[in-house]
Image (cartoon, rainbow, N blue to C red; front, top):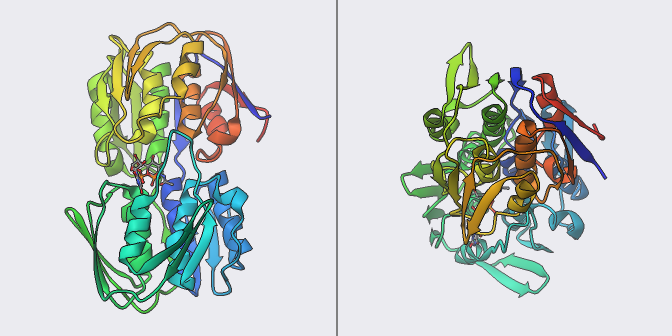
Length: 417
Ligand code: UD1
């Protein structure tokens, strides 16, 4: 089994190239199923979730491959509805985007429940409710989700009961090609939602974003384009957490600064400063850093996908700090692992309070993608050697995390590429 080995205590200095955003790449790759022409997608991260998404498209008969390190070519003209590979679908959250794209393209879909990181129950009733409003029938609901489009209403208004990235994206993709108008309310406005809208509009869709509403005027079809996706805000902020732990200064290249501002303003107050120079974002740790109390919530608030890494950072902050998890109340599997490093923390319901602690090396288990990243952050500052198991979780969403950190001075290596 793949492991990461870290010896803590090295400061980080140098440049890191941020990869494309996994959570943009996945819906945009699946959106290519809506298009009968070739699409070229640039800035695609080479992570295992992306490789799995391309594999699914190829299973369906589409052409879907990397044509250089970060560019993917997709042509779904020959795609057809097949029995979708249950093993892969149940491993990946973004496979839920097959529901909307297959419904739109083929009129029906039957697939396993989408999987993804396991931090508690991840229901999809908002997706189903929206598909039903758009005229779909849920045929069965046991181990498989089977949906079939019937007569689609001309005009549809879908009010999501809770803000959901996945449901917002699925409603957009299910309604982009239609002969009606769809209003979606109580929407997620994460950068990856906006990235998908921008992609589809350049393909010929008619999608408008308002304060708390998305209006989709259905079009007859979409054309193939070349498109560059956003860079990954969570990857950039994970490296900022690393510098907060180790000290030093790193220059992050290929960042979308406006997506990072909310979190960087928190970091500023803690003593992790940032500045832009020659197109790069420089992150530097001041002599001492203070903790903070944060609450995760939908964008533009503090992202849940940075919660575990931020908790790792808090172990090194004067006064400690706390995180209230406002999206996934059970996203705390990393806490037991931080305790193995010597972290002093206390979790009550969806809140964790973390004291400044002297961390030492240990053998740790990554339990999900961001939890795995948090263990790397924590181990970089710990005294002595740490081993992190289950690297397969980390490579789902971080491209070359180990070699990027090694290139800026971390003592880290992995027993796989
Ligand atoms: C996406 C991201 C994930 C991120 C999350 C929140 C992808 C592939 N994954 O996940 O990295 O952590 O957004 O920013 O982009 N909910 C329901 N019913 C539903 C749908 C959601 O109750 O039908 C709840 C969820 O359990 C959760 C909250 O709504 O409590 C938000 O979930 P959602 O935004 O849908 O997350 P994902 O799209 O799964």
